[in-house]
Structure formats: C-alpha cells, structure tokens
Length: 156
Ligand code: HEC
Ligand code: HEC
Ligand code: HEC
Image 1 (cartoon, protein in one colour):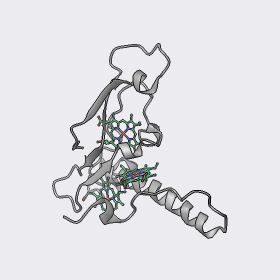
Image 2: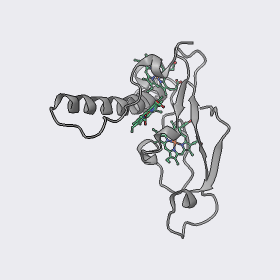
Image 3: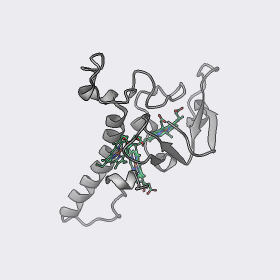
Image 4: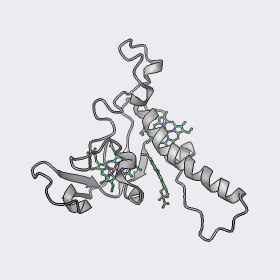
C-alpha cells in the first residue's frame, strides 16, 4: 500500500511505548507513518477510489486492535504481508484451484472491510442502543467513523 504523507516518525519501540529496558537492541527501530495513509487496491482496475485513512486519528485505540499480530517489539508489517491478507481476489470466487479453500480473510478487501467497517458499525450500533435506552447521557456519544461506501471511497 502506498503512503501519502511525508511525515514518518522513526523511533525504537522501546522509546515510543516506554517499554522496560532489556529489549535486545538491533532491529527494533520502527517507522510509524503519521497523519493520513492512502490505502490503494493492489489490482489494476479498482472499482472504487482509494481510501484516505487517518492513521493518527486512530491512535486513541490500541495499536494491536488493528496490528493484531504485532508482538510489541519487532517492527509492524503491512496488512498485505505474505501469509496475512495477501490475496488480491476472493479465494471463494477464484478460478484458481490453488486458492480455493483458503480462508476468505486472506483477501485484502475482506480484511479491510471487516475491520474498518466492522468497528465503525459497532460503535454506531452501541450509540443507537444508548439513544433508545432512556438513560440520561452525561457525555456526548462518541463519534463512530464512516460506514457508507462513498464516505471512504469518494466519487472521483
Ligand atoms: C484503526 C487501525 C489502526 C490502528 C489503531 C493503528 N494502525 Fe498502524 N496502520 C494501519 C493501517 C491500515 C496501515 C497501513 C498498512 C498497509 O499499508 O499495509 C498502518 C500502518 C502502520 C505502519 C507501517 C507498516 C508498514 O507497512 O511498514 C506502522 C509502523 C504502524 N501502522 C504503526 C502503528 C502504531 C505504533 C500504532 C499505535 C500507536 C498503530 N499503527 C495503530 C492501521 C492502524
Ligand atoms: C477498532 C475501531 C476502529 C477501526 C478498526 C477503524 N476505525 Fe476508523 N474510526 C474509529 C473511530 C472511533 C473514529 C472516530 C474518531 C474521532 O472522530 O475521534 C474513526 C474515524 C474514522 C474516519 C473519520 C476521521 C475523521 O477525522 O472524521 C475515517 C475516514 C476512518 N475512521 C477510516 C477507517 C479505515 C479506512 C479503517 C480501516 C483501515 C478504520 N477506520 C478502522 C474506529 C475505528
Ligand atoms: C471504512 C471505510 C470503508 C467503507 C465504508 C467501505 N470501504 Fe471499500 N474498501 C476500504 C478499504 C480500506 C479497501 C482496501 C483499499 C482500497 O481498495 O483502496 C476497500 C476496498 C474495496 C474494494 C476493492 C477494491 C476496488 O476498488 O475494486 C471494493 C470493490 C470496495 N471497497 C467497495 C466498497 C463498497 C461497495 C462499499 C459500501 C458498501 C465500501 N467499499 C465501503 C474501505 C471502506
């Protein structure tokens, strides 16, 4: 996936997270893209426009909520790293026999939609439930993030 912004912060994981000393030195420096990341489909003729993902706007969440295989020490790898969400077509719909039977979540689009839309939808549903309950809300409901197609894939 292509990164759009120039600003990238490189620090050792130990510095960013104040991890206890003792992490073996060496390769644990990690570059964290700040601001927005442009998420581009890994195919020749995408149906939709690329998605502008405000990375840092999500930093109130745990990094591991999205980077769910991260061990907290080694540099984080991209979502489409080999063996992760590395298929550019749906295995279920593929003509390729070698792909048939692989889990659908290997398909990058499935992974992104499930995670991005899933979380935003969850917050929306919880907000709607709170609105229906006649509880006195002391604080405004949290913002949810987009769930509609063109909110993420603007018309070009
Ligand atoms: C809401 C989901 C989400 C959260 C939370 C999140 N990230 Fe990310 N991050 C992403 C996505 C999506 C990418 C782009 C991955 C790609 O291009 O394959 C990314 C990319 C990165 C990359 C670059 C990986 C590469 O391709 O080299 C690093 C490093 C990173 N994030 C660090 C962090 C850190 C540190 C935190 C916590 C402070 C964090 N992220 C929180 C979704 C998230
Ligand atoms: C675990 C929950 C979670 C995940 C996963 C997640 N988001 Fe969000 N997203 C949020 C929340 C919460 C907000 C509202 C943040 C705010 O306005 O303070 C948000 C806001 C946004 C916004 C609007 C930001 C703004 O400034 O108005 C965009 C765009 C967005 N998300 C895109 C994405 C994309 C693309 C992904 C997947 C790569 C993703 N999100 C994954 C929770 C999540
Ligand atoms: C929260 C953000 C978000 C929402 C909402 C969303 N998508 Fe996506 N979508 C993505 C991300 C991220 C990707 C993977 C990166 C890319 O393709 O740019 C993706 C990929 C795709 C792809 C595969 C690439 C292509 O363009 O051919 C299609 C098709 C697609 N989305 C259609 C939709 C449709 C239709 C909707 C509404 C039902 C929708 N998306 C809603 C974030 C979103």
